[in-house]
Length: 217
Image 1 (spheres, helix red, strand yellow):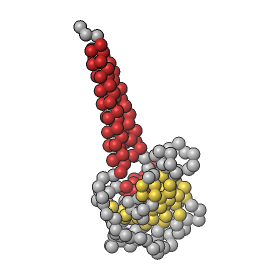
Image 2: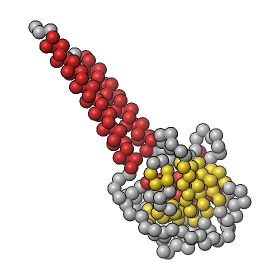
Image 3: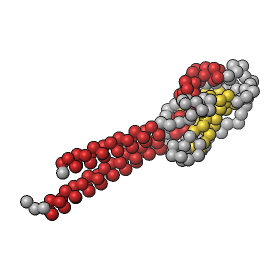
Image 4: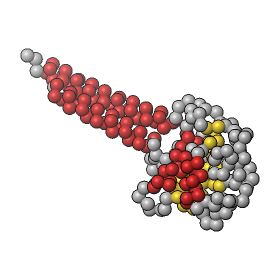
């Protein structure tokens, strides 16, 4: 009986670990391609060619430097601003459309980000709230980026001296509310695994009890 309970415990532990790491990996999933348009860009620039096995260094740098991950879902990131920085001369605006694959087989979505790589004193980006992706919507907001974003955009073909543009941008405020949905999903998955494991242990114990009553000493 002890051996049976030990085996069941090992199976439960493995199942919990599998579900935990699967959920954690899913939570980390983000954009896998970007398409850039804007003033001076004659043909749209695709970051990460279709069919490439990895997103590549430039795509990874763009994701990290532009703030897109925080703008997708982070509800407690101090870097996100509800309104446009008042001391910033934005300069020309470019549009980046990020492809965001579904985590569970749903439709692939495209999230649009406005970027100002030549803003003074630092590059900034903006994502409008309410854009659908996965089974939720973008949190949105303004993000003060760093020089790496400007450099990677120039490296992929964005002209340094682009004509200024004056887009109309929705600067509605964004209110932080609680923790990330991705973290909640991870917690739910782990809780389900624990409940299933406890059910296995209870069933094994019940079988052992019945066996003991059926064969008295």
